[in-house]
Image 1 (cartoon, rainbow, N blue to C red):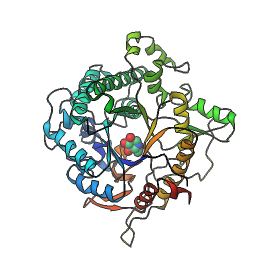
Image 2 (image 1 turned 30 degrees about the vertical axis):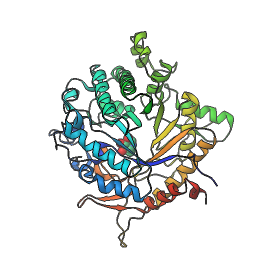
Image 3 (image 1 turned 120 degrees about the vertical axis):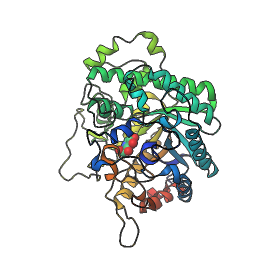
Image 4 (image 1 turned 180 degrees about the vertical axis):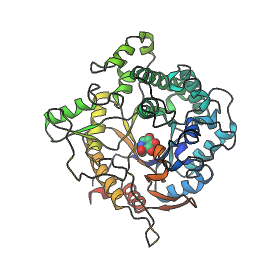
Length: 451
Ligand code: NOJ
């Protein structure tokens, strides 16, 4: 039987701002996403949507966890809203905020669902943005303190901490082209500084989590970026795909895994770094490189990959190539070669922390939500992930993105990524066909993928 490793953690993922709602309840401070969505001078979000209510998980988490249990889920990756815990980012702790996550974590544990806690999934306290956000080095100790507070509070209950989700998207989309909060358009030099501050912040958080929770916890980071797969299964082509994945001189350097992971793990940028990165790197004192902490594992968000030929060039997609509802290419092979190449470069265990697709889901006449595209997507991607495990890549678990349809950042509620449909007018949840397909995958530890 074709199965995944024993104790493989099959789960789902979501993030605080995308699903919680309760944006101004129980002492929560404002975040940059509250500000971005409520900007009186510009409409940044499709349809003027906000995360004010989102899926209302803040009030409905018990029912949601019960539904997770019926689907047989073994893990839930969620994020903590920093301004719920420390409303101004660096001052007094809001006990009501901690209480919400206490209840969520306890509910998960009572249902045998492993909580995977992400500390930063983009909802920065506005008070910290007022001081420069991720461009001001004062954020390093502030983030470290926040991480320590959570580690102290949840030690013994949470084993897996993930410090920062997709710093590449924050940097490129939020500080580079301004389509995400905080909506800035800064130079490449400034973006290089932000990556370095992210790396130092991760390291500070990891040190402080380990200091209070010790060997009981595993600390990871969740970067994203370009992942390539070869056109042909030849050694030459596979090598070209590996090199293209991590070549900073090719395409967009800011959207690469190595722009952050090389700092943490190799304590340097490699020779392909562009001028802006080199100029900034020349100002980094050796003592700062020494502060970098290698994570215990890497979380990888896998969506769409780039096909590379044996010369190392990107392959143009033919007309009619398969697309998701939000027009991302469907490229299952990236789930084989992406993790494989990350393991080859860094030698660390991996979690697939996100994978899924948006579909134009709707309720059919029979009252159900049929999503054959998502089923086909999961089927194909998971078969490829299995190849990665067979090739010896240590994969600890797979988190489908997402459990519920939710707030897709600048696209608002236009994109539906859930395996559970949300009727936003009533907040009713309806498991889609893919939820039951996923339940069978989990129950058979992947064997049904090969029937
Ligand atoms: C990655 C992000 O972490 C998540 O917040 C987002 O919703 C998904 N990708 C889908 O775009």
